[in-house]
Image (cartoon, rainbow, N blue to C red; front, side, top):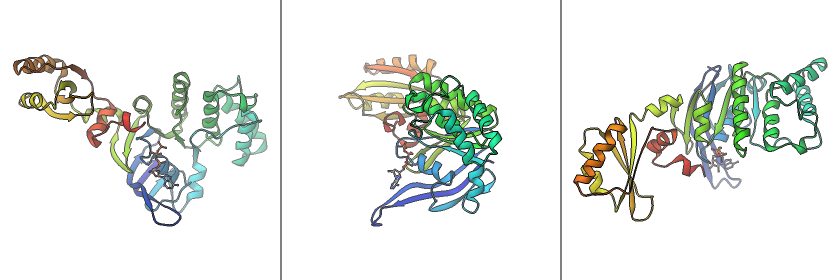
Amino acid sequence: MLIETAGLRKTYRSRQKKEEVEAVRGVDLTVKEGEIFGFLGPNGAGKTTTLRMLATLLEPTGGTARVAGHDLLREPHLVRRAIGYVGQSGGTWGEVTAREELVMQAKLYEMPKAEQRTRAQEVVEAFEMTEFADRKIKGYSGGQRRRLDVALGTVHRPRLLFLDEPTTGLDPQSRAHMWEEVRKLRERGTSVFLTTHYLDEADALCDRLAIIDNGEIVTEGTPLELKRQIAGDIVEIGVSGDGRDAAAVLADKPFVREIDTDESGATGTTLLRLYVDEGSVAVPDILRTLDGADIAPASIELHRPSLDDVFLKQTGRSLRESAG
Ligand SMILES: Nc1ncnc2c1ncn2[C@@H]1O[C@H](COP(=O)(O)OP(=O)(O)OP(=O)(O)O)[C@@H](O)[C@H]1O
């Protein structure tokens, strides 16, 4: 295991020690060598706090962890040597060039002088930065700057790279490019632990992920495993009123596993969320049943479970909305 934590906790105390924020409330995690592991959750869920603890930048209030073969609390210096860390955007800026920053980083990690420029060149090529590596950073686009941030984290060839929201604020093309860079890191043998509040990013990029909410892990697995927790399909039906009549007639149907009622839709309507075995078979039957009870649905929609449905099922809220 590359990362193994047990009961990892962090409580922030205000200076007057009056207020306490339980940012991380006992996290048990395992990350395997060679994985892209995602930590998905809404704003304030505790993602950055966990990541900074694992990267030795923040002292845990409780719990234990091994990172890259070393005890996080007893051997932080050995952990530090094995990992790379890229914080939320805003790291690089200024009059120097990407190449100069990379050489600086190599120096910082005490690489022999002869190797510093060679290593910088390798990283420039690996991250396809040749075109702009010798220009001043202040003229870079957001995507170029972010690419440099991540490149800097890899100069000393870490086994494990921590990335805090690597694509936040990037345009779709730069995001796609960043996903490719992260996949290439894995191909070259670097494992990646990243945080994100993008559902599609967690789904497309991560081998495994944990969903965190309110400082606690809600669920963990491969994107496919998580979506399979919601067996079958989801049919969403909009009905006027409180939806009780519709829910009552549909609840008796053998193919309906569960019905959730969501009143947050348009005024005067209710959204019924039906978890069914096979959506395409269920929809005609649902329509017939509603028709038989003289209920005309305002909308009906069939969809395969997404990671948002997993979050919704576990927390009762949509991550799409909570992430802001
Ligand atoms: N230095 C601090 N002092 C007090 N409270 C803090 C501190 N840093 C974070 N918190 C609180 O801890 C909780 C978790 O914050 P954290 O930054 O880990 O969340 P996050 O999931 O990374 O969110 P985001 O996506 O916004 O970065 C939040 O309620 C936050 O306000």
